[in-house]
Length: 386
Figure 1 (cartoon, rainbow, N blue to C red):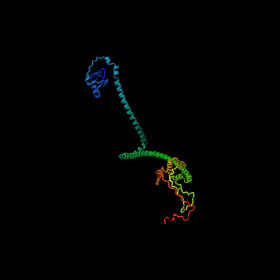
Figure 2: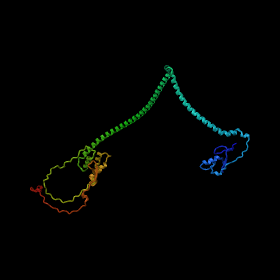
Figure 3: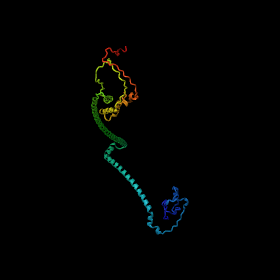
Figure 4: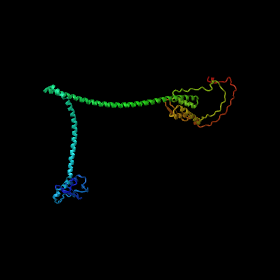
């Protein structure tokens, strides 16, 4: 009879068929279970309290003195039921799980059989509908081996035709799917084409507007250039610089080149005439510096004219610097290099400004008699080289 204690490793009761062992912490197990535990565990610890133990501290065999129990207590149904309840529940659970699996498989099988039965029912309806024709065909063919062979050949030919029709149906379905995909891709391309067309239409409208604005701007620029040409009629130094810029600029192509104006006193000069004049006193020539304030005023006067020709977003600053380099010779000048581009070069200052001033001795005045009337036989330079 088993003892009312069990091994925590295998969850089985202690009985006399297996040896019971104990360790120094006081817990008891089956000896075989304890050895297997020590062999499989990474560290040798008690399976219940996890204390460190070793195989030397194992008590191999324990003996228990069990008192005899009354027959009534041994056969008490409540005790037996309480003892067997876990086992009974486990068995019932296993049985229910197996029954559940069988029921699931039976449901799947019933579903397949229903589908198959529906197919057979439709086939049965077809066969029953053609039964009279089949019987008439069999009676026409007659009875015998030749009739059976002829009927077999007919059935085989029908089967082949059925297979051919089945293949044709499959190819038709594939073709239908392919056509659906082609229609879908064609619709997508159509949508993209429509979107591109709308975009191109908008771009064309914007370009037309830009072209109209450009024509208006060209017309206004032509008018401004005409106004500027009229303002450049006076040949001053500033206006000459403006004329040069206007003519050398690639923008005003329709401007005419400037022409030389006739002198104010347009009288003929006789180069053969000679005059007796006093020799003037030699005076050292000095370079007259350009008044910077006046030039700045002239440059400021150029700004309205340049703003008429060029837009505010063009290189107006570069043009002003070019004018400044033209007006002030000691600046770095920027001009055209003759090959369609621009170049910079340094304009040297006059030598009179660079050399130191040297005081020279004054010459004596030489007075000559002033003739009141020109001598008729005065020598000329005509026969000097003869």
